[in-house]
Amino acid sequence: MSEDLYGLLLTGFGETMYMVILSTVAALALGLPLGIVLVVTEKGHVLEAPMVNKVLGTAVNIVRSFPFIILIVVLLPLARFIVGTTLGATAAIVPLSIGSAPFLARIIENCLKEVSFGKVEAALAIGAHPLTIILKVLIPEALPSLVRGVTIAVITITGFTAVAGAIGAGGLGSLAIRFGYMRFRDDVMIATVLVLVIFVQGVQWGGDLLAKYINRKRYKFD
Image (tube, rainbow, N blue to C red; front, side):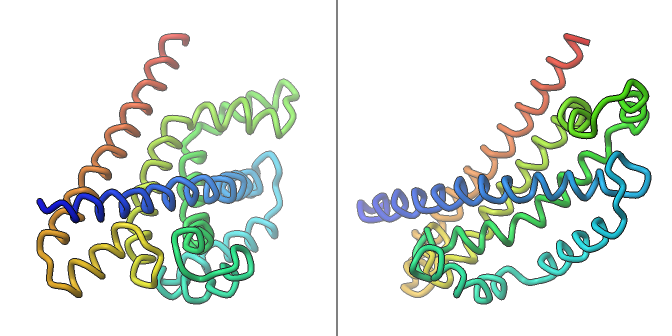
């Protein structure tokens, strides 16, 4: 492996990690409350509001229907307004976060729906406040599933960064396109794919390990 390739990979990986970490945090900040609201506002749940649920569900589906490359282009003016530019890793965080939040919200919604409603009813029977039910029943009971869901989201966002690299976001995706594909450097393409495979495998392994640890701790104290 040539010396310049090490530098290119290090820079590209650093930019990818920067985008993935900040975009995941932002998407989680948006998607977690949204996913919770989608669950608790359903008919018969603790904060029943069918109209709110329908409007939010429709909005989530609309955003999710956009191919990510199109969503990036649509959100370029917003990225320019927030960070002052449409190029670079920082600018890419805006569409990455907004594009990933609805996807993450649906994952969180499905995870929370796995919690037995009997446990929610038991909490209601003793007069628990809806917020207490969310924080003390729904989230703790669904935590292993939530960890696995966030793991999936991180891997998906990593894929999105490669797409964002096509329009100047930087990262490993941009490296593969500009140096690997356009300059016909097979070593760059192979090395980039290898780094991404190792990273994704590491994220998946870490997420599975954490979810299993939470399950073991839960059963131990139960």
